[in-house]
Amino acid sequence: MMSRSILRIAACFLAVVVAVFNEHLLADQQPERPNIVWLTSEDNAIFWYRLYNPDGAPMPNVERLAKEGLVFNNCYSCAPVCSPARSTIISGCYVPRLGAHWHRKILPVTLPAGLHMFPWYLRQAGYYTTNNHKEDYNFAASEKADVWDESSPRATYRNRKPGQPFFHVQNYTTTHESQLFPERPNDQLITDPKSVKLFPYHPDTPIFRNKYAHYFDLHRQLDAQIGTFISQLEADGLLDDTFIFHFGDNGGVLPGSKQYAREDGLHVALVVYVPRKWQHLVSAPRGSRINGVIEFVDLAPTVLNLAGIPIPPQMDGRPFLGPGVTLEELDQRDTAFGHADRFDEKYDMVRFLRKGRFTYWRSYQPFNFDGLYNEYRYKQAAYREWRDLYEKGQVNDRQKAFFEPRPPECLFDLEKDPHETHNLAGDPAYANVLVTMRRLMQERVKSLPDLSFIPEPIFIKESGGDGFGYASKHKARIARLVDIADLQLLPFEEAYPSLQQALASDDPLERYWGIITCSAFGKKAMPLAEKIRRLAESDECPFVRTRAAEFLGLTGLGDPGPILIDVLKKIDDPAGANLILNTVVLLRDGAPRLQIDLSPLRDASWFTASGEVSRRVNYLFGQGQ
Image 1 (spheres, rainbow, N blue to C red):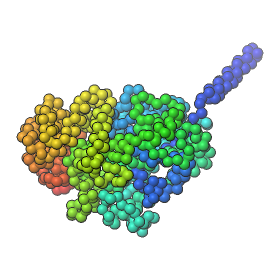
Image 2 (cartoon, helix red, strand yellow):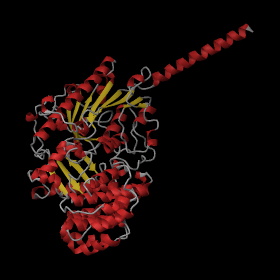
Image 3 (cartoon, rainbow, N blue to C red):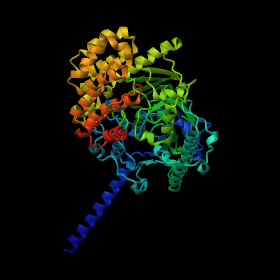
Image 4 (cartoon, rainbow, N blue to C red):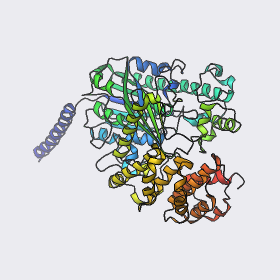
């Protein structure tokens, strides 16, 4: 009996030994992988860094990373505000093709079938994945399953298993635009307001100078926080094993940058520290500056490539570090795409394209104006002052453009005009460049396809949250809508026959975009005014009626008030009401300065709804209406 017991004990002991041996054997067979850390911040255009601009903030810790790594001179967020920018980062996709581009989400959407948020792939490969702690994705909650080992204000790479590689995101809110809402007197600033160099489109006032200086100081604070984290990695003995990325989630943050698809809203800093142990994964020597253009869709594939993980084919981006990436190919990259859509309650639709030294803006609703009221933006004193100076006629031509209708397309030479204030679109010397950029933009929005050509309330009702599937189903339809919108770029006489067809179309969205294009032409479209007036009175689609009323108001060819009130009383959807109220604000605050009696709307079903529409209600009804 004793011998059998001894045998069982021996057998159990042997099984444990074999299991431990096999575990170590499997661990030894796992490929060694680098650690990767992201130090992400908020609202940081390159202008604010001394690393990119001699007048920028000194940031010695970021500059240390640069000396021991790579500086990317031309990195672009795909959106000039956080949620679509971060949705781009986490998916590796251009989010206008997924329906994740409106900020903030009303309808969370799903990823394309088979695609996961990129940390999921790292976790499957054995990485410990942590996020501290902002997410702000426009995707459904179900998409986050098995993405993070921890995502919270307490998340840290230190909780991983011994020897386990990690991917950690540390988010800093120090430079977020909200930090500029409180006043900070000049005598509490490190940066001298008299020393700052203002953007050419900003008025030179004490308030603007104070906010510039304040924002430079916030970058100094951010750098100190980054230094603390680097010291932690160093104390943990991890610098030789860890790639460290630092970038801002979008540009900003003085008025006209964050929220706007332009150079100051999209062009961000990107610095990557390269550990000596993993230098072989990088095609440029440490301390190099890279001129090739990087987009936020490239971040996810780059991390996967550094980790030796195959890149999912559903991703749009390309890796800029890791195996297979050469410096020669990297420096040949010269294109970036950006988009501006709904920001909180404010609707717009602008697309941005950089190619080489030129940038191109396509404003699909050019009668709109950049300074259209947005509650969150106007919490900043500089926004309010700029608007007040415009109202008083105390701004120059470059400064007043923010509050006036825009051209349908703009072309800029960044080498001569880094803040994009001199539009070359009408200059014959740049005609060939303009045609090329226009064609590239048309190809881009059609190929995505770009879901902003579908009004958001319609997308919400019809897509079920499957933006990718909805876009695929409506690709040909969206291409037709693009063609109608691009009639804005022709002389009216050439566009007229196609506009007639669009206004008579059985497709309500062709009528919708036909009217928007007529509004872009303004009074040149008077030959179609009677047709548009009939659509305003009786079209079955409330959004067609809205755009028709908008045309009448913008051109002075009719009274839009009764039509808009009728549409708003009948609509039962807060998202739809918000889109229509955007037109009300445009007509009230823009060039027409129309007074519309909104009191009949107090009984509308959406009037007390929360969310984006509530901001419009507060604004419109807080003015004594």
